[in-house]
Length: 339
Length: 247
Image: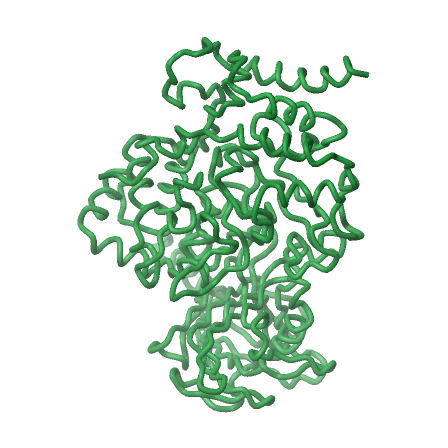
């Protein structure tokens, strides 16, 4: 049984390790991008160029993209919180209009197969259109956005250089997507442990990792692989009656009520509060929710059940989740506003 | 000389086969033309203003007296903004054989085969620059009506975004049975004028449900969301009869 459990732990780790270049233990921390072994998928119609990424970075931090000139992408995706909304359960958009959902982290968003909490947007170029135009986010009409950016000489010039045409909503979304594909984070203590640094994880985090990848803790079935998510929508028994129906908002099906996309856990210690509505303030609250088996709900995923973990085991799981924090990711100058 | 005659013959035939037709729309609230900035009242006593209307027209066809159809390819995006015209606004141009018709039919919406393509690769009137792409719900908003409600001393924005394949609105303005509709397309071409009563969206449904802006969740009416589906179904029901042929 013990051997079986370790196999469950080791097989995913070995698979992760196979994808990574060897990193010597205790070596000076390399550039995070050097640790990225995965090939970022780039759509053929939006090739990545340095100029486009730079334009995307400028746009990402520019509040002039919003109707009242006060809300940038970075207002709700703040770099110091791993590009999430730093303590706010839901975000506030133009004219103080409040949203209904928690802004997710953009950590490794290039690898998300599905975007938004329902997971119904297939690519970053299309996803970006949502917040740019949504009434309670940035509230811009395509024509107004094009007019505003065209009136700013540096943008008019940059769009001409990058796209060979004036600013448009589509080009803004394409540039933002190019920048977002550089938000890569693979230098957490967990990554260093996988790369061979035996001292990267604390004893509590090691115990938590064993639980995480075990049938007892049962986290890894949904938070799977190097991205710690399978991008699938699930009902986690957060409520018996969901005020926000999730995936059912789109499908209209009863069985989809309360289903939201499984989020990545990379940098999760930086992205509180948690769940689609930011209703759980701390990782411990989240762990306690899963340990209890959630609230009764007919749509709850079959994996949601009382786990019977002790208090110290819950602490260990939290310690492991904290080991997924990549400190270099949030201070990487290439990802911060240009000076 | 002979080739001249052939060209003339072809030209005459082409003229007979295709006359230019322009589809125009008048916006109404009840019987009266819509006026931007004017405050109207719903049958349930709530005061509102219309700020924006955009919708797609597709699957257009003219219906011949024998029931056969002359189908028109393509789709159009009709746009009405504050300050712009609301009467006799040209929304689509096409060609049709001259002759007598018993009406027309079209859908408010985007055909399924276009609705689910990658919007980043589509051009206007589709595509992300249309202002109709629904980022979180792959596909387009078919009918986008936005305005302001005046609730006590407070102004609240509201939107009706009708979309998803289930909410494509079939508009049928033909009558073969009673022959009350007769459209003539002369060889020189014509305009077909529609009235659209935007106020019908605010009528109560047979079940008594209505678009009640006092309820914050009903100020954002989107697609098939079960939270608001009952009211969206009511709006859809009334939209089925919101278009008519102008006399």
